[in-house]
Structures are given as structure tokens and as C-alpha cells.
Image 1 (tube, rainbow, N blue to C red):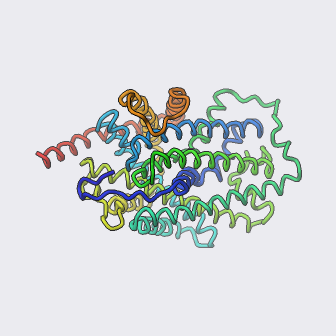
Image 2: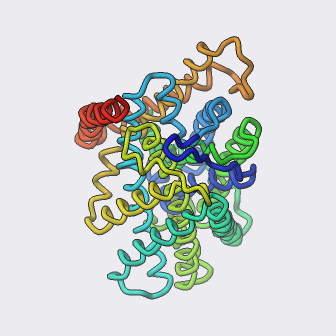
Image 3: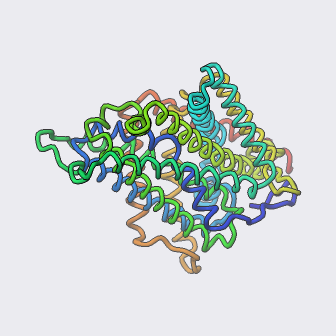
Amino acid sequence: MTDHSSNHSYLRRLGIWDGAAIVIGGVIGAGIFRTPATVAERTSSGLPLLTLWAVGGLLTLAGVLCYAELGARRPQAGGIYIYLREAFGPLPAFLFGWTMALINYPGSVAAVAITFADYACRASGLPAWWVKPVAVGAIAFIVGVNLFGVRAGAWMQNLFTLLKLAAIALLLVVGLALAHGHLGGMLQVDTTRVVSGGAWIGALLPVLFTYGGFHYLNDMAGEVRDPQRTLPRALTLGLVGVVVCYLLVNIAYLVGLGHAGLAQSKAPAADLMSHIFGPRGATIMAVGIACSTFGYCSIAIAGGARVLQTMGADGMFFRSVGHIEPRWRAPQVALVVLGAWAVVLILSGTFGQLLDYTTVGEWLGHAFGIATLFWYRRRFADQPAPYRVPLYPLLPLVFVGTVLSVIIATAINAPGDAGMSLAIIACGVPVYAIWRRRQRARTG
């Protein structure tokens, strides 16, 4: 994406493995180390649990393939913001950016930074009052590294992706060591327990949330080399890697703890490690989760800053935020603004509520973002596309339908949070009018 205010653009330095690492790091955070226990509570045995994780992975893969075509068509920084702006106009794009770049991205960074700090303090024996200072320090460090460009951020991200994959591999080895040759038992179906369709949907929701975060590579598409080829391959490779990891981890939980033990566990990864290594096992896993969550924060800050910078370059936010630093080709102002706002949320303790309030807005953004694919197909029907999603229009329809189902289920389960999410989006309308007026006054 060209920065109109400074005549500098991003440099395309990310290859396929960098892109796949961004996808893996953006999806795998802390969820897989805790969410399987919730899914086990809502299923009858190991087979339906694994089926849900496979179904969730296939549904997410449908969305990823759609994002692959969108990214190949518009390989620019900003992701969904760009697609919405071109297909539906500046107001929907602004409302997405308003909700995500200013609230959801920094809110998720704040929440996951606290999770990182919590596990880091446990692993190092620091007292609880160190959690917030460590979280703030982590955000400052991540922002500082990313100020020197996407290549520096990619090196850091690749390292922490390898570390989180090592933690997952360790879980698998421990689970198999505890299985004692009884792998088949984990797939036995409990015929005495009947699970309703509503319970299945309730179990699928946390699975889908744990698969979230695959869109960050599209936010950084302006820095991907040969994007028409690299983006589809990196997105697909990264998401397939995530699905494999998630299935293997759940197998490890089932063979190591059993379905009933998994359902009763509050920290299944730590419990699994403790069976072999005792209290030291929980410490080892705390280090693994800390690495995983730190890597997620790095990606969320880098991706969110690109959306914020694109909005600034469009005149939809402060012009200075749209600046791309000429030497390192990094959105330095946007990085600092996003990081500083995340720190404010940490210190105020309000990030949890903000995330609850913006969940519906985030999923609406995904639904409308994928829906732009239909516009692109009609608008540019006579032009060759570098990549086309297979089974069109089935896959985008399946993904949009799934996302809308998630929104409905979320609204039913938490109507207050859904209402606040819609209210936050609505508040963006007068803000948009103000920025448009400022833009017209500046140009006219």
C-alpha cells in the first residue's frame, strides 16, 4: 500500500515460510492449551471431540482460501479494510477499522500480553504484582523491534513460532508416553450420553474462536514477495499446519488424560505435563504458553498497525499515523499508537470488557470481508485472477453462513455484549462524518 503522505511504500520482504509462520502464530495463542477442556465438557467422548476440531479446521480453511483470493487480488496492507473500501465504500471500511484497529486489536494485544506475563511470572517465580509491568515491557519490546521493519519482526516471529511448535510437539510426546498402548480407547463413544444439536453448536463455538487470527497475513500483504503466488500458498500451508497441530494436541490430551479427565481439567496442558514431570512439568508448559502468547502479540501489533496506517493514509485517521518511515519502511507512528493504546488498556484493566463488546463486530467484519469476494468476481469477471478459490461460490457461502451462525449464537448467549458491540459500531458513524469533514476541509 502506498503511503500518500510520504511517497514511501512498504518493501516486499516476506516469503512463503515467513507468511506461514504469521498464519500459525496468529492462530495459535493460548487457546489450544485451555479450550479443549471446554469442548470436552460439551461432548460425550473423544471421537465427537476430534470431529469438532476437524470440522472447525475445515470451516476455517474455507475462509482462508477465500482470503487467499482476496489477498492475491489486492496484495496491499490493510486486509479487510481495503476490500470493504473498494466493494462497499469508505463508511463500512471505516466502521471495520474503527472497531478493529482502535479497539479489538489493542484489546486482544492487552489481553494476550497479560496472559503472557502471567505465565512468564509463574515460570520465573516472580510475584503476581509483576504481571502488568512484564506485560507492558513485552509490548514495548515488540513495538521496538517492529520499528526496524518487517524483516526484524519476521525474524522474531519465526523464532517464537518454532518455540510454540516445540511446546506442541512436547505435549504430543508426553501424551503418547502416557497412552500405554491404549490409543483406541480415546475414540470410544459414550452411548449413554446424548448430546443435542444445540450442545454441538455450543461446543463448536470455542473451537472456531481458537481457529481465529488467520487474517493477519492479509493485513501485511503489502510486504509479501510475489504476493499472487506466495499469499495463497502461505495461507493454506499455515492453516493446514494449525489444523494438524490442533488435532495432534487433542489426541495427546485424550490419550494422556482421557476424555473425562480432560473435561474436568482447568489447565489440561499443565496437567498433562505434570503426570510425567511433576510440578516442573507445569513450569515447562508455562514457558511454552508464554512463548506462544508472546508470538501472537507480535503478529497482532504488526498487523493492526498496518490497518491503522492505511486508515491514516486514506485520511480516515490522523495523517501522521499514515506515515511510513523511509529507511526501515515501517509504520512507526501507527506501531507506537497501537502499542501505547494497548498499554493504557492494560493499566486500566478494561481490555476484557472491550474484547467482549467487539466480538460480534469482529465476526461481522469477517462475514462482510468474505462477501466482497462476490463483488470482485462480478466487477472483474473479464479479468484473469492470479488465484481463484476452489468450489466457488460454495466455500465463501459456507464460511459466511458459519460466521453468521457464530454471530447469532454469540448474540443469544451474550445479548448485552452483542448490543454493546453494535453500539460501538454505530458510534463510528458520527466519527466517520467528522473525519470526512476534516478531509474535505484539508483538500478543498
